[in-house]
Length: 110
Image (tube, rainbow, N blue to C red):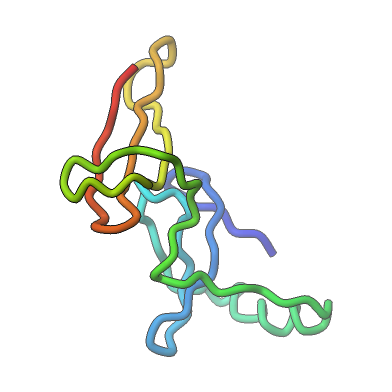
């Protein structure tokens, strides 16, 4: 079963935090999460019957590509990278960066 975010249509993945399972959106700028619904409760049984493993997202890891970018706050040279269409469709996307060390987030416009 594949779940998509009702807010931004990105993929949602299961996350286990303090023994509670919930779904989180993979789009970092969205941040939507929800408790499993009644239909979602059989996911473990379905997965076990198909004999493959599902990795639970680690809250300490970002699911984004890492690029070379200098953080203005701590001078670290690596950052996570994503883009969002923040203006009209005929204009360039806004690039967002998050430092891999101090988690400072900034954006750049083209």
